Amino acid sequence: MDAAFVLLLGASLARYLIRHEGETHVGWVVGLFVVFGGLYLLGRFLAPAPLSGTRPGARYVTWVGAVLAVWAVLLALAPSAAWCAMPLFFTGLHTLSTRTAVSLASVLTLLVVASKLRFTQGEFDPNAVLAPPAVAAVGTAVLIHLKRQAARQRTLIDDLVRTRRDLAATERRAGILAERQRLSTEIHDTLAQGLSSQQMLLQAAERVWHADPDAARGHVRDAGEIASRSLAEARRFVHDLGPADLAERTLAPALGALAERESGAELTVVFRLDGTPGPLPERVEAALLRIAQGALANVREHAGATRAALTLTCLDDQISLDVADDGRGFTPTSTPTSTSTTASAPVAALPGRGHGLPAMRVRARQLGGTLTVESEPGEGTVVSAAVPLALGTSGKGAS
Image 1 (spheres, rainbow, N blue to C red):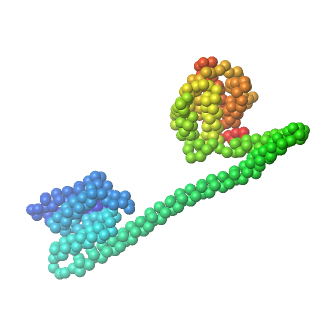
Image 2: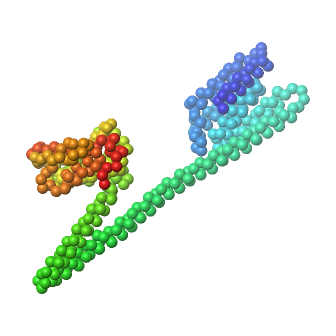
C-alpha cells in the first residue's frame, strides 16, 4: 500500500507539472505535494497502524485526519491528486471500524467526483460521476467482507485454543481421578486388607495369650507374615509414585519449595541455583529431589544443625546437587559404591545410620552418577550428588 501511494503520488505530481507548467502557483502546489507525501510516510513510523481486531489509537486517528485534510486542499488545487485517494481509501477501510471506514470512503468518493466535475471541460462525462462510486462500492464491499471473515476466524481460533486448553485440563483431571481410584482400590485390596487381617490375628492372640500360648504365637507369626507382604506392597507403591512436588513444577522450584518447607524455628534451609537448568527427564528430577529429601531428613534427625543449604549446579556436561549443614558432623568410613566405572568414586556411609545414604547412593548410581559425603566432627557435613547429562538424559537406568 505504501509503494502504491508513492507511485501514484509521483505520477500525480508529474501529470500536474505537465498540465500546469509555467503557472504562478506551481511552486506552492509542488510544496503541498511534498508535504502530503512526507506526512503520509512520516506517519507510518510515528503512528503505526493498529493490530488487526483492535481499535486505533488517538495518534493514528489524528494522523489519518491530517493526511486527509492536506489531501483535500491538494485536490482542490491539483485534480490529478485524486489518484492518491485509492491508498487512503484502502488504508482507512483496513484499520478503522466499519462505520467510520464507510463514512470515510463516502467522503473520499464525493471529493473525487467533485474534483472531476469541477475541472471537466466541454461535454459532460458520465464516467466522472459513476466510475468513482462504483469502484468505491466494490472495494468497500470486498474489504468489509474480508474484515468480517477475519473477525470470525479470530473468534474461531480463540474458541479452538480455549477448547483445547479446557480439554487438556479435563483430561488431566480425569487422569488424576482415575489414578486416585486405582490407588484407592490397590490400597484397599492390599494394605487395608492386610492391616485388617493383622488386627484380627493380634486380637485373637491377645484373647488366647494365657489360655493357649502356642495358638497365640501362631497368630503373631501369621500377623508378621502379613506385615511383610504389606510392607512389600507399600514399597512397590512408593517406587511407582513420583514426587508430588514435581507434578506441576520443575526441579529448581521444587527444591526451593522443599527448602522453604523444611525451614523452621530450629533449622533454616536455603536454596541456591548456580547456572541455568535445561529440560531434564522426569526420573533425573525425581531422583535428585529424593536425594535432597533424604539428606535433609538426616540433617533434621541426626546433625543437630541450625543452617543447611541446598545448591543445584548446572554445567554443560553434568548437574550436581549439594546439601551442606553446620551440624556436629562425623567421621565417615569409605565403602565402595559399585564395581561399575560410572560410579567409581567412594561414597561415605555411617555405621548404623539405616538406609538413607545407601538409598541415595543407589539413586545416583542408577543415573550413572556418583554420591559423595564429606564430613568432619564439629565441621558439618556435605552430601554431593553428580549426574552426567549425557547419561542422565538418555540412559534408562535401573528400575
